[in-house]
Amino acid sequence: MSIRLVSIRPQITAKSSSASEIGTSPSCAVLNFSRSRNSSIRLCMGSGNGGFGQNPNGVGDRDGVIIVDHGSRRKESNLMLNEFVSMFKERTGYPIVEPAHMELAEPSIHVAFNSCVLQGANRVIVSPFFLFPGRHWNQDIPSLTAEAAKEHPGVSYLVTAPLGLHPLLVDVLNDRINHCLSHIAGDAEECSVCVGTNKCQLH
Image (cartoon, rainbow, N blue to C red; front, side, top):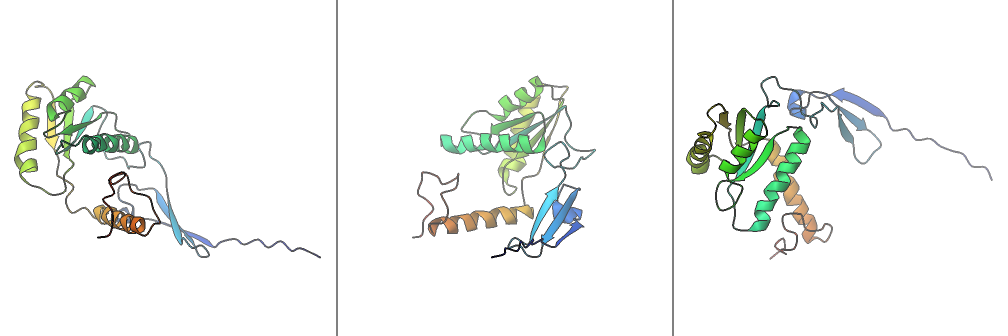
């Protein structure tokens, strides 16, 4: 019996992605595998800050970033913000990133602002972890930030826009929907949001 070895080489083509395709990362290529179930993958060159392109007007070494949510009486909800801030800091490479809760829990915006300054920030960027603009973004967060800034007259600050209608949120929402559908079908475990709650079920 003779055995013939057959080498199957997938046909690979590469193309550069435009800024609209890859968001903030300018050095990406899409590889298309014509004989693969997964038809394409995207490879991006790191830029030293988690793949985010360098922006001359972006976050600098002396900038502190505060990611602020509403705050909850539920401890688990507040801890999730800490996890997100850790993910954000690792992905972006920003040196000073702090969590804050607008109310109901610590650390407050005041505590987070002080922490940024103690770490060397001379500008503090407060980013509301809210979906749409409302009273909290328009009044409460700016007021609390201004109060915190009074103790640091040499430090400037900015309250950014909330998440809003960002196109990447479509992917996030769609991913959450499909994971929950996979869970009720028995093909996926509970996600980190629902784990232990048994909330994700068909009624």
